[in-house]
Amino acid sequence: MSPITRPAQPRSPARRRPIRTRLLLGVAMLPLIFAACAPDAWKANPNYDAFLNQVQRVCGNKSMGEPTINDLLNQDSPMYSVFFVDITSRYALGKISQQDYISGVMSVGGGRESEGLKCILAQKTP
Image 1 (spheres, rainbow, N blue to C red):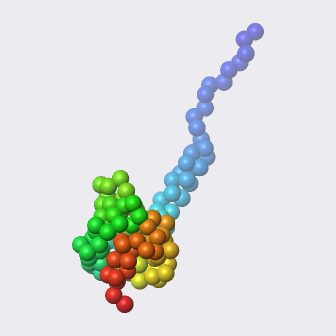
Image 2: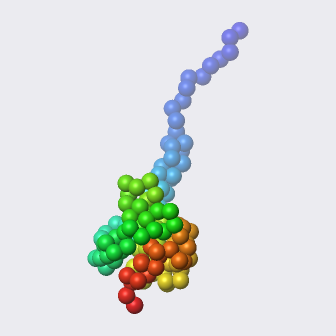
């Protein structure tokens, strides 16, 4: 005797709910993800832009350890650092203190005595 086979049943809407739920959850998380970005990531801030332009003009060729400031800020450079741009943004906008900026930038390289760090600090007016 041959076994009795049942015809395949279409997927029920209940089986598709987890996919929809995950998609909706992902869409709902987008505002939180965007809020975690640097303050200048989505719209230009004239104060930050002016500070960054001044740093590049005055300090661009100064070193931060091995890389120069221009290397760290230039997106086409293999030494480009998103972290450096982000922490400099926070410092320029007064979101972090000078001491926190120094501590953060030290992870990029050069230490407290680097020419680049001294130059950046000198550009920020109290």
